[in-house]
Image (tube, rainbow, N blue to C red):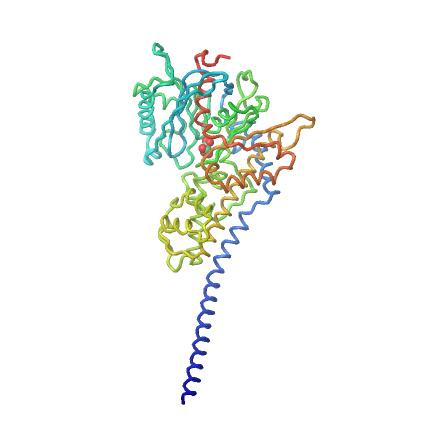
Length: 502
Ligand code: GLC
């Protein structure tokens, strides 16, 4: 009897184990079945975003050809190749007190520098950074420029020790204005806005003279300043970097937006009109963010992002690369995975529907998470998107998506740089034995803070250039070139000759 009972228990136990195995197997089948559509979407996306070295090379060729076309005539290419009218790059001889205003993202900065001339260079500098209230980014010209002029007024009034502007001198202080949008210039200190980019959309400003608007706002507040140079951030970057290193040939911005400028011979600019500068060269603002090529990899997410943006059909290169967009691309892929493959369970997390909720700095933090359980990824998903308790598998998948999106952007940016090198004939070694060194100055938050992005940019350049040429190319982080660079350009284009003494 006792035996029978034991046997019955054994049998029942075996049945329970078999039942459990069944449940486990069924669960595994369900999870595998659930995961299959996830992987299908991710693999498809990965395949679409892949950019072989050959393709990057073709893209660079396209870029070089379109640069030529844009230099030929206005409207010759979607690359505007805007003339900066910079004819004196700062040399280090500049002396005196100069200001800069740097406007082009969610913050603006006002800078003052005391230049000491040869040997002394930047003696002292100070700056203030102010966040632009979002409503002013889509408001009126007057409101935005009045806000800026008020800050300028305060900053100038706080000029203290170490900055010298003769007391008895009633001439205006000179300022370099970095305005990081496409501007068609007519001289070093005037130009009209061509269009807005990067989420700005201020009414009545396109077609208006940018310097006149700022000057009017300053005059209203009795700020006695004269804009001596109007520059794009890329131009400021070239000027600032060149001040320290004579081998700088180009400046690239990888930040909220992306763009590049480079030094070109006047002879190579058929659309140049008027007297050529003594130096025989100038700096060209390419506005490469607007580049288009059949070699791009455009996915359904990119298409939708573009269509729903403030500037559909424009700035396509920028929308694949820049900080304003990378996090948003990730959000769109996650939304599809949630809707079509239930990545986060049966309910789509509502916050995933909100455009631009996932910013690139958060994506970067997830991408650089080195903890064993991807703690940062889990935390960001919870904090930003309200998604709780994600499995390690899901977190790993998100890191994989970051790889795909950030590396595509970095590889495209590297191809852009190769395009400039090709245009300048610096993608090969010089025939004679001359030692060649080519410096590309790069600035912007994306490059500075998204390490995996900048590392990929560097390694891609090494991949697409020959070993010998790669050894001659330096990618230099130009910290804050665009701010100081504008002040330096105000000095080298000063109306008052003593500032430019040699
Ligand atoms: C956008 C602007 C361009 C600027 C770049 C980087 O592409 O159009 O002028 O240089 O962003 O800030």
